[in-house]
Image (cartoon, rainbow, N blue to C red; front, side, top):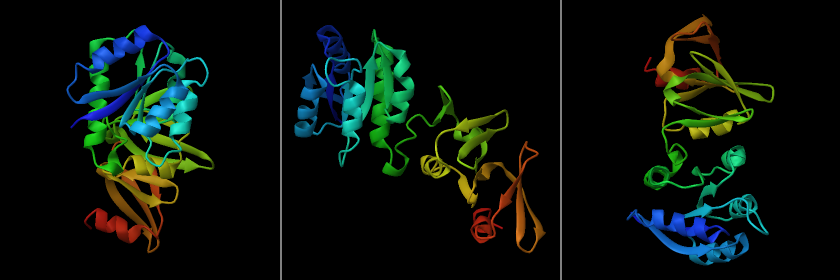
Length: 240
């Protein structure tokens, strides 16, 4: 697999350094370079690269503004932000960047990013977001990386979403439906319009009446309501 990339940075030294490190990887083809976001946009529309390594603080259009523009394309390239400023990590997450490289670059850091990029293009489309095998969740001003297997269940309460593990409950700004999509390919099942449950953690399906069911989970005192609309599918999923 060869991935075509474009490197965008208005600082010549940083741009050349990153290009040099990327060329050490046979899977990466640096198709073009740009010293501004405006020039990069022209190149991206013409070259249609798989990925763009993008500086953030640039004269004129910023890297964030360019990334927002690229998201509107029918087939946007994967974005890797490359910057000296760690304060943009949350914005990078919101723009679904593959990674966030901090300057000065080093071989190990770039190699890890290249591996994530290759994994993303090697995975089926429906699970392309899970390149690290972990779920990236923005919680307040933090970005958390949770192992899907550590999650007991996810629920929404009003406009808020919460991710519950055996140790802690995390508030999240991501909608339940979006989290459900991110966790496709893992053992999660919608049991209620407001609940998504890790089926690996289900210990017991309790029937309180012919139409009222609850789930008991391993290592949890919480009981999860099951909508009668989901009971049949849930029984099949549990092989009952």
